[in-house]
Image (cartoon, helix red, strand yellow):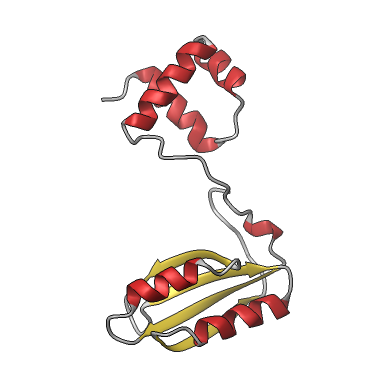
Length: 142
């Protein structure tokens, strides 16, 4: 069970995980030491599960959706191989004609093209269909 201060802390971090510790403590009306203890407890409970760099999709000049059809029983291997691509931003399991959809991002079309070629050559990938994103009309929640 999360108390009101923990819930407020999680709400603030959800909106901006980079909020400085001093600002968090001030907004919650608690000391930095108390805040740190709460954060450590929330980590142990699995409510906060790590600190990571999230790529900013707005920094990618070229983005593409890649629909991927797998040969049977190759999902795990293909997923491991896809994780090694520096251009991979997101990977989704989907229903329908494809098994996976990868979102790629890079500075150039050449980098995207190379990544698409790399995906097509992976063992367990039967076929890909690529769609370069021309523009983003809107993005909710960002």
